[in-house]
Each structure stands twice: as structure tokens, then as C-alpha cells.
Amino acid sequence: MTHRTWRIGDITVTRLVEMTVCKAMGGEESSLPEAFPEAVRQIPWVVPHFATEEGHLLMSFHALLVDTPDGRLIVDTCVGNDKTRSVPFWNKLTTNFMSDLEALGWSREDVDGVLCTHLHVDHVGWNTMLDGDRWVPTFPNAHYYMARREVAHWCDEIAREKPERTPEDEGRPDIDSEATFLDSVKPILDAGLDELVDTDATIMPGVRLMPTPGHTPGHVSVVIESNGERAVITGDLVHHPCQLAHPHWSSAFDTDVDQSIATRLSFFAEFADTPTLVIGTHFAGPTAGHIKRDRGGFRFEAFQ
Image (cartoon, rainbow, N blue to C red; front, side, top):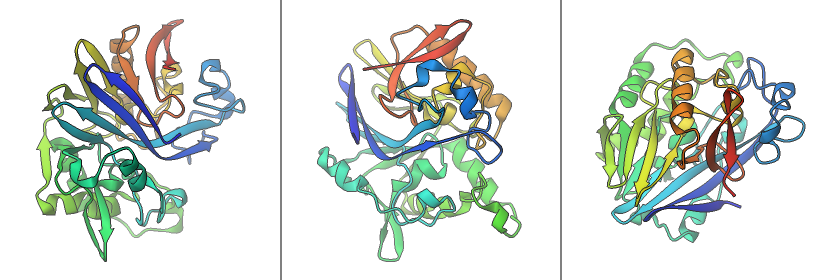
């Protein structure tokens, strides 16, 4: 199923999947270095929605379409088609993402806003599309909301002199940063469609940002509130539900590991045992659910 919809008061959120993967994690080359299959198998509640019985993680790469009475907003735009990337299963994609979007009744011209929780490769790809030999904004009438601090961080990173790439660099967390910025962020800045905002900004009525740094310095989550109901889109403060059982399991892509752990613990504690619907940006299967306290820690209860 490429899409699934949740209602929060007068606002709907629809998941549009670009791809799903099933991977054994663990080790220095893994995006979750501590999530070895034997460790994942000790978390019974992640099966079957979020992991296989063998302990392989199921992960989703999807955009979230937020439809409000005041406008249409896309949160994170996945990897995108036609882009040269070092990770093989992201390289030169030819997915049906745009036709699937249109099938849901969302045209390129109808999108009022694109919100980037951060500027990593798998969150900004469909910001742009290939037009001949140029990358142009995919959503020509949209404001592209990005945290001011996040843009400044990546501008500084790219400005630093980088050593020559070697074959050993394949899959290195920062290896696609410059290419991603040039083909998926800079065209937005050049077109003047960017809206640089604070990490606690209100984007439109019922949609506001929540600063959740650690994965990147300007990382944000998205809080949605309407008619007394609330949901929160995580972004990459948490990549997989197994991190609720082990908040100290950090992504290899986190720029500040200590901060990312502190952010996760604070986030889990704030929303645990509340009615808030938590929508995981990389959570597979049901994708949404509730955080519950569990024997001194936390677990994720999928919303069916």
C-alpha cells in the first residue's frame, strides 16, 4: 500500500511511499550500528510491522501530505528520480512517486508548501525535478520551508574543503551532501521559493515546528493540532521504533550523538501515554501509533 490517511480534527495526513526496504542492521557500515538482528529479536513488539522474525528492520521512505483548511503541505520529499547518489538503491531512481501523488488528487501546482524536517538526501529529493538538463522546483507555487539554522549548517559544511573521494567513501554518511544541496536545495534558493524559518515557527494554522536537534543541528519535528486532537511527525529524531526500546541506539548519520539521545528521551517522555498520534517518518507498516511506557522504557503501539 503506497498510501494511508489519518485525520486530526479538520486536518488529514496521508502517507505516500516512495520505497520500503528490509535490511539487517548492526556494525559500523549500518545506518543503525547497534541494531544487530540478535538485539532486535529481543524486542518482541517490533514484529511483524517493523521487523522480521529474523531481526531485519523494515523501513519506509515516504512523504507526508498534510491537507488543512488553509493549505496543502508536503512534509519531506524522499529521494527523488534521476539523481546521482552513492547509495545504490537511491541512485538514478525511476519511481511512480509523482503519478501516485496525482492519483491522490494532488497536482504539482496545488501544493502550497513543502516542509523539510532537515536537508538529508532522503528528505529533499522531490524538492526538484529534472527539466532537460536543469533541476527545477517540482512544486512551482509552493513556499519551501526550511529551518534557517539547518540551511546555514549545510552551507558551512559544503564550503569546507573536502578531500578527494576514494572507493572506501562509498556509503559514507556525508558523501552525498554536496550533490544533494546542489540539485535539491540550491535550485529552490535560486528560484526565491525558500522560506527560512526558526525551528519553532508556525507554518500555517494547526501546523507548527518543534525543535528536535541532534540528528542535524536544525532538525525539526512537525506538530499538527486541530479540534483538540494532536499528531506529531517525527522526522529523523527516531529512525525506527526499535529506538524506543533503546533510545541510546543512534543513527550513523547523527551529527551530535549525545544531543540526539537527549532529544529522543525528551520526546518519548513528553508524548508517552498521551493521545498524541506519533507518525514516524521512516516507520514502515502502520507508520503511526502511540508511545507507551514499558518497564522503565518505552514501546510503540501501532495504530491500526
